[in-house]
Amino acid sequence: MKFSWMLFASVIWSTYAPASTFIGNGGNMLDPTLRRILNTMSAALTSAKDNPEDVCACRGTSEHCAALEVLSEEQQKYCAAFIEQHNEELASLIKPSSGISHVWVEDRLSDHKQHRQADAIAQLAKKRIILSETKFRDLNDAGRLQLLTHEYGHFLIHNGKAIEDQGSIGPFKGADGGRQLLDVVGAALVVQARRSYALDVDDSRFSGAFYRWRISYSNADQSRAQSFAKPAFQAQNATVTHFSLTYYPRPNSQLGYSVRTSGVEKDGHGSQKAGVDSSFHLWVNYLGLEWRGILMPWSQGSWASNIHYGLFMGAGGGSVSHKISDKYNTEIQSKDVRGGLAELSVYFPLKYGFLASLGIGVDYTPFKLETINVQNRQPNSQISYGVSYGF
Image (tube, rainbow, N blue to C red; front, side, top):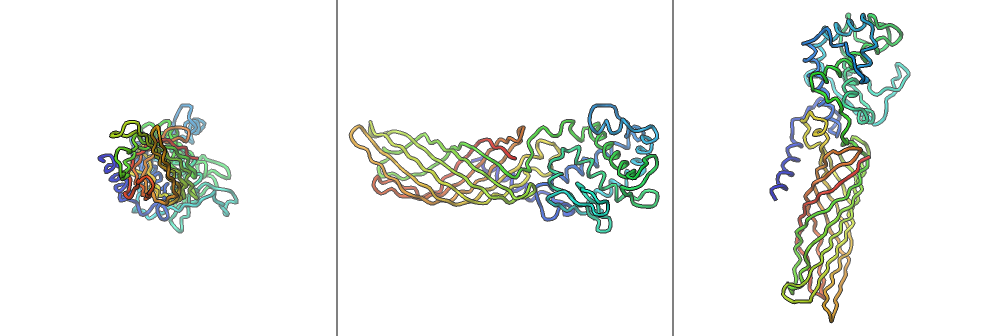
């Protein structure tokens, strides 16, 4: 029971956790991740002040380090000077007070101005950044940080004007010199974030929370309150299993649809009448809705920030059967049943798309088997544990 209250309190706290009204377009699964990456950018900018000359220099095997290693000496110095010059300005832009909003769209964007596909577009006049939720979901934290740095870079005023992707800037020559500069600045902040331990070196090893489909299997310990005319026939040693398939229309969706099958099997023998055995079987198929969210939206860790919850509520039907037997007689009665289920589960990231789960739930499936005088009129609580796969 203590566990149940702690789990419920955690979800309530996550729902009312301090939210940023400048992020997103109505609340969704990726908003906490976006907020976390902006916090990482802020930490990287603070760290960059300590070593302004070396911020764009790196030797290593990572993708972002390699992007800095190929720069000429002139380009490295220009990049470092650019970050030092605009450090405070960029730090101010990523704060809520800047008024820059973020809008999610499902697919990649079409940049009509440049006639190309884009993962994000900065709209200076509207003070907003449009993000592809599919791309943002698939990137690791380093890629997300570089992408956001690039888009926020367009809001900087450099040499008296905003930075565009086209055209040369300093030693960054060619038709897309502006894009090269902002990409390099993003790579530099990724390296700086790792140097200051604001960003994990391996930030993509855990399963994410942004799947569209989830298959789940769990076992549960259940408190089931059947009323028996003859207590000697009470079945014991319950085995409860759950299978479910959940679908979310978009990776960013919080509301999804779920189909669940729940089975309860009990076998036992009479405690007051030797030789009397009892078995109980209940199977119910539920159809309902599930609401999901990040459990700890304030977390900065790549593992903890992917812990999420799912609140399922649904109704359905199935069948119940009970058998009482001894060496002389056997009595069996079956009946169709209808019921409802409410379950709150927390999913912990593992690897390769797998998740571990813990949950609490209540089901109400009333029935009465008149022949053998067995009935259930009370809700039944349960604590479950299992494994899921999201894709």
